[in-house]
Length: 106
Length: 147
Image 1 (tube, each protein chain N blue to C red):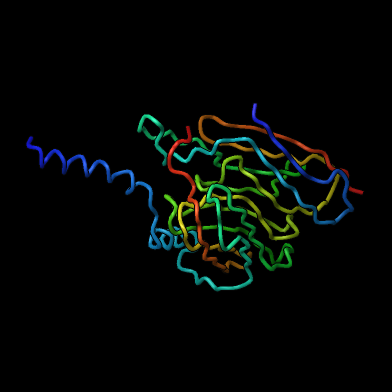
Image 2: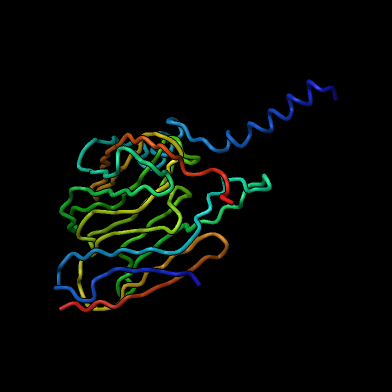
């Protein structure tokens, strides 16, 4: 299973803008590199990252091979209501990982 | 097959991988055109933060922020980043909405050479804004498998 690190506040004031940072363990193999046998290493990247807040999409990002290994993404969101922030990474070779964090808005 | 023709053939094969691995400023312009269409791109409102001198092209921190009130009526819809000399001109495209509160996206990217990076933001009124940065890369993102 892929390792995921998510940094988001556990509590926030209603209407506050909170930063969400997410890191996932992934090689992000570009498909442009040749291995020790001279053959190209097949591409294996995370193609898409999406974030939902109580199942409403708040952010998405289409990635290319130019994103570093172990892709890191940071973005902001308005703390509208308490609930779950769900982060989802999908990519080559049926890669699909989901992680969720709870946030309490007062 | 004589020796000369054989050598010419191997030279052509050897060159192929390099063809595969080079975007050009023209390729970047084309990739940008695919996103903005015929709209004009105005320089400004976008801030592209990245180090000017990069020691390691494998992980380069990039932060794109756009001046915007981020209200339902006036917000940033998308942020795109392009490069000139990596194998492909696209770096990433992020979709935003008023729910973000602040138009700022950070990530880490790979750079294969010293080059110009362009960030383009699309606002909800359909206009495009841009910023660019020229960076020097001393160690390019590696092209070969590490052993």
